[in-house]
Image (cartoon, rainbow, N blue to C red):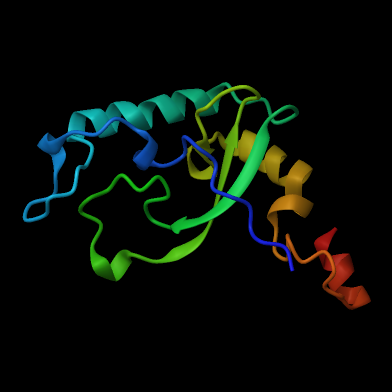
Length: 138
């Protein structure tokens, strides 16, 4: 059985510079300061505008669905849930951009082009599907 792909470097705040100034109250963890977090997220949104769906690299990982980059120190426990999160980057870039931060046209084009890599049951190539299930994947 194949393992899920390793998380791409550069997609999570763990790969970003850290500071004690933004630490969550009562915890000793380093977190991005509010201003650093806003800049870090803005870089991803700007990079998302430059991604060409024809040449982009895509990847999915399992991450917080409401905080896919892992940068929100105040995400309430009741909103913390793990799911598949999808990222894209331009070739040669180290900035991974969550599909949520891509323009709709870019996101749609990436899904169309990479559906077999991203959509469930990606990673289960040996999994047998009924004919009607196969037609639903097209």
